[in-house]
Length: 160
View 1 (tube, one colour):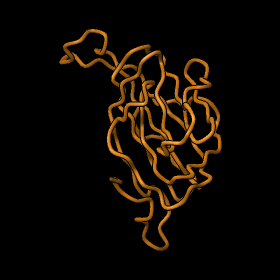
View 2 (cartoon, helix red, strand yellow):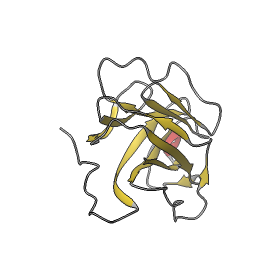
View 3 (cartoon, one colour):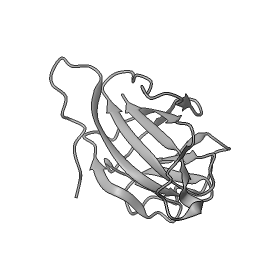
C-alpha cells in the first residue's frame, strides 16, 4: 500500500512538498530508489563509480563510500528547485539528472531488491530532476554488529 502522495501542496506554496525516510541495507556500496513496477529490469545492471549516482531506466542507483552499512536515507519531493540539506557536512554526489517513474510507485531497495520501508505513490511519472547528497560517516555505538557500526546519511531530492 502506498505511504503518501506527492500532491499535498497548498495552492501558491513553493518548496518541500513531502518526504519519507528509511534505513537501507547497503551491500557492495550500493542501494537504489526504483520504480516499483515488477516488470522493470534489474536496477543494478549498471552501477555508478564511487560516491556517485546513476540514473538507469526507472532507477536511481547510489554508490556509497562504505561497503556495508545501514544507511539512513531521506527522499524529498519538491515543487520547485530544492534547497541544499541543512545538516552540516552534506555534499552533492554526482551531477543532477532526469528520471521518470512510469508506474508512479517508488521504493528504496538494497542490491537484492529487498524493500526498505514502505512504497511511496507519486501523482505523476515525471520526469523529475534528481539530486543526491551524502553526509559524513557517523558511528552508532549501540549497533551490535561491528560491520554496521559506521553509516552514512543520504538525501535524494526529486523536483519537476
